[in-house]
Length: 109
Image (cartoon, rainbow, N blue to C red; front, side, top):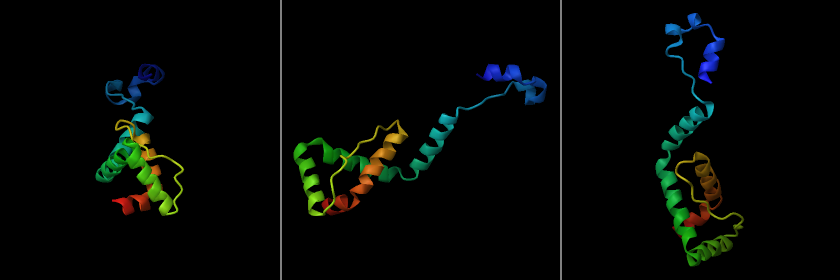
């Protein structure tokens, strides 16, 4: 794509005749921004991931989590999500679900 763009633009209008012309992918830039932002709360994400792993692996433990939800009058509508470390949107989904059960986590911790 860069070659096509360079064909359309006069190299005289670019610094060093376009030798250093480079264009980043918007999705890549967005991914870098999100990763940088998430690094600020990396310890929180790790704790949520550990909790989600713990409360979803063994059926008996999952039942205890659901029971605690019932005792606190919190509907268990969505099961806990464990993220994929390489996909930031899965981190978002994990945090989105976990925040619904914050009171449950506080109670059973």
